[in-house]
Structures are given as C-alpha cells and as structure tokens.
Image (cartoon, rainbow, N blue to C red; front, side):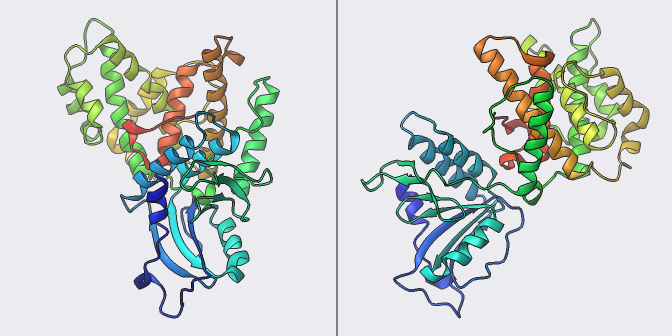
Length: 372
C-alpha cells in the first residue's frame, strides 16, 4: 500500500500550470481535504492532480489509505491513528501539489482552510501546520508511527463548538463519554441530501416497515396492495429492501430488522419538518403518528414539502446521537447497565439515518456504517 501511495506523488508534468515550473528542490505533497468546496490554491505550486469523490477511484484509494494507517499500528490503535482514519473517512477532495520550500507557510494556511492532512513522499502524515501526526519507521516502506505530540487533526470550528455543547448535555444527564471522542462532520464539509431524496427514502422505508409489521399479525398486507397505495415508494427501494418484499415468509430476524426502520423514518420525517422534534432516545417512537403523517398527507401532499431542516439542526442531532450511541455500545460490550435508559436499537437507526443524510463516507443506504 505504501508504494501505491508513493506512486500518487509522482509528478505529471503535463498537468502543471503553464506559468509554473517544477524544480528538484520542490516538496511533493498529497492533501486530503474534508471540505465540500475546495479553496483556491492561491500560492505558487505545480498541480500534479486533483479529484473529488465524483472520481470513482478516490473512494477505494481512501479505503486503502485507511488500511495502511491501521496496519501501521501493528495491532495497536493509538488515539492519533484512530483520528487519522476518522479524517480519511470524511475526505471529499484529494490534491497533489509540488511546492518550493518558501511556499510551505502559504500551503499550510491553505491546508487549514481546506481542513486537510498532508502525506509526504517519505511516508509521513502531517497536520495542516506541517507537524508530524504519523512518522514512517526508518526502514523504507515500514509502517508509520505516532509523531509530534503537538500535532493535531483538523476540525472546523463549528464542529468543536457542537461537541462542547453536547458534552455538556451528556454531563447533565450523567452519561460518560471520553473527552477525546472526536467531532463529527461540520458545515464546511456538509453535502446534505436533498428534500426529494429524503422523501423518497422515507417512503421506501415506510412500505418495508408496514410490511414487516403486518407479518407479525394474522393478516399480512400484500405487497401489491402497498404498491397500489404508495407507488412512489417502490421507486426508491434498495436491493435488500426489494429482496425482503418479495419473500412470502421472511425470517424473524429480517422482520425485526425492518420493524426497527420506524426509528429511521422518524429521523427522515423530522429532517423534512414533518415531525417537531427528536425526543431523548429512551423510548421507541410513536409508530401511529409516523404512519398518520404519511397516510393523511398522501404521497402527493408530501411531495409539496419544500425544504429540509436546517443543516445545523441535522448536525446537532448527529453529534449527539454519535456520542449517545458510543455510550450504549460500550455498555453492551462491557455488559454493564445502559445509562439514562437509552435504547441502543433506537440510536442505531437514528445514527444510520443521520449518517445517510450527511453522506457519511459517501455511502448509499444499504452500505451506511455507524462507527463509534
């Protein structure tokens, strides 16, 4: 993996700006940026390549880089290594530049604006200020090791503010989470799903949840009846959801899985402004209220919903849910009491829906992950 990463640092002369000349003393760097919109490269440089997540090759490259970082720990996951991996999960832009030593200060200012970490030709991972986060071992190609203790992973200021607020919320409820649990995606990095995408996903979840609920009773609702009643919902089904609906007798585990989707439906209805609040997750949602929202408005009425909830509200909910989900997972792992009456299943579905809303790792519904 290290050699493949180094190949990305090989300059492509034909990509350099015509008024910029590369030089043997120039420093070659890969920048991994989490912002949605890349700031202008307003310093002298040679551009060797630039790509966003629209380039299908970037996602597997990032996945390989994460494995490289994880493998470098030789079985030990340090705080720095974990945070580097979390950063790579949020990367949306990848830029390779060559700069003269005199331009490093300007490049570092740009890296701060781009919320970027830097990868050097020697295999070091740097923070935006040029401090070493992970340093390669002396042997070429060997795993990187933790570097400068002063080095820090970058997060936009709103992310830190949101984390600080939610840490206080948790402390007030006597829910303990580590102080170094990192922030989540923030406004400069956000690419929120559109209202149309949210509505389509909510309707798809609604028909599979109704079908699952009906299978627990004596008179299951026929899929053809659901298709006639909610035709737009069937346009947004995922492959796994289609597989579930065509089964006459799904397993009990499958039925339970899709019954839990009501909790995700709550989040999506809330994101569309159809529900007023996400209450504290110590109780399951009001299924009747969720169903009434869809049935009474009808699919045509729901299509008139013009906008999604404010991005800041979604991010507030995601940050809090992430920390609460960490607390329930730790309790279940250690077989201790779950704090504050939290329900892990509720948090799992909320976390899934919120990560989908913010395009976490740019994954579609069936592949969404909820790491804590």
